[in-house]
Length: 168
Image (cartoon, rainbow, N blue to C red; front, side, top):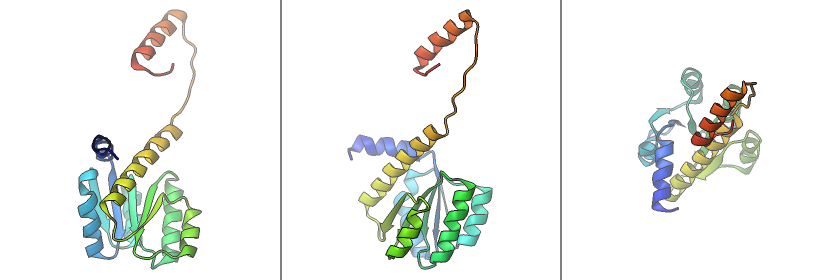
């Protein structure tokens, strides 16, 4: 990735909020230190129950989770997130991830898996994926509509759309 690309990614991700869920305070602090300058706000919570309650009040744009030691709870948590927001960006960052758990989580459309400790290259990769997913989700949520306009008004809208580079 080029330096200017990283600046563009950082500029875009700086508009987003993040939730870090990890029972290890040291790991939470390490991840927060690596990504804090790339997000508008970061919240850290040390258990899935409180995280879900908080998410229901304050939805986050990106969620980082390390709760693979509790696979059933993790799967239920991700299912609950998907029920609330099917477009939620979720990244699993863990020391050990079992193949069986990966298989189950993949079915829930988790965005990525990373092994701890994550490197600067991993952080850049995560940020790029977040940006790509955010853009894709915005396109998926775009609504198309049509209206009938008198000819003179249509011509005015057409001209304005050309100036703004949007479709009429």
